[in-house]
Amino acid sequence: MSEVISQAFCSTANLGAGFDTFGLALKKYSDKVHASLTTGKRVVIQVKGPYSDHVPINVQRNSAGPPALALSRLANLRRGLEIIIEKNVPQGLGLGSSGATAAACTKAVDHLLGLKLSNNELVRVASLGEKAVSGSAHADNVAASLLGGFVVVYDDPVKTISIRPPENLSIVVVIPTLPRQENKTRLARSIVPKSLSISKTVLNIGRASAIAAGFATGEIETIGSGMLDEIAEPNRQRLIPGYQKVREAGLRAHAAGVAISGAGPSVIALVDTNRYEPGSVAKAMTSEFARNGVRSRSVISTPAPAARIIKR
Ligand code: HSE
Image (cartoon, rainbow, N blue to C red; front, side):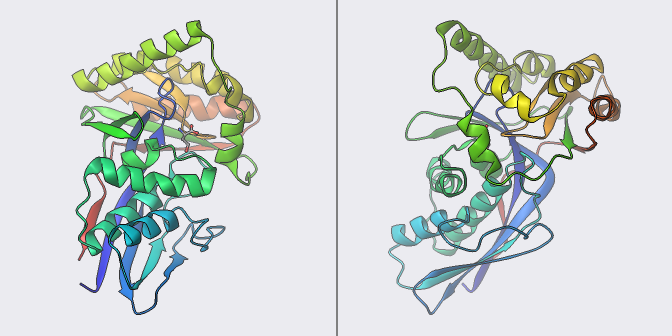
């Protein structure tokens, strides 16, 4: 087998109350990874594509590196690996860019080396890539990119539950134009409180349960009813000028729920397309950002399928 090429879509994490627990794959952007064996002994990474600027090629600092190394060790590989990343997912927006790369790399190398890992094992390996980039091996984005649709990640070691989202679910992503922030996810994680009161914990457990139940039953209103967070959003919203007003504008325009996408600064709104128009929600939210002095743009997505091998 000479070269394997995989594709993994971007994702939004948390969905409000599901901090580090929920992920939803988005069909808007995807990374591709070409993996092949070399005669050397090392893992070598190259990056190309529209969003390759600022992506490190150092194996310890690129989210593809640690998964590739872990899989090589698992397979007892005596040869080197070349990983070429086609970087099509924009970085720093809260759309799981590093997670999409880690997922695509894990999928490709697992296939190349014939490991046939289980979904849970793939997610655990891919999350090593997130650790390299943000300092924490959270698995929500990588799980969504690997498994597609809506995922719940829980427990230690991580387990996953995958649910196919309702067909009439549309995801509006509003992307504010804010100064580029080095190590944005690391910063956004550093301001999450270290402890939480029981009353706030109970609120989040209830809302997160509503989100999971809504995906299981296909009820978009139920999903939206849980999209309010007590863990990360209270502190993170100050990184997004006008966030509360934009959230309210989205809800007034009939979004079922609005939340910060992952570590931000993008904001997502879930819309039931059987009843409402995602374009109107997008317009209401970008106009509200403008009223708060922030330029923004929007993209509208549907849920994405699982990572896949596109060439073997
Ligand atoms: N769950 C993560 C966070 C996603 O909110 O920090 C960002 O990668």
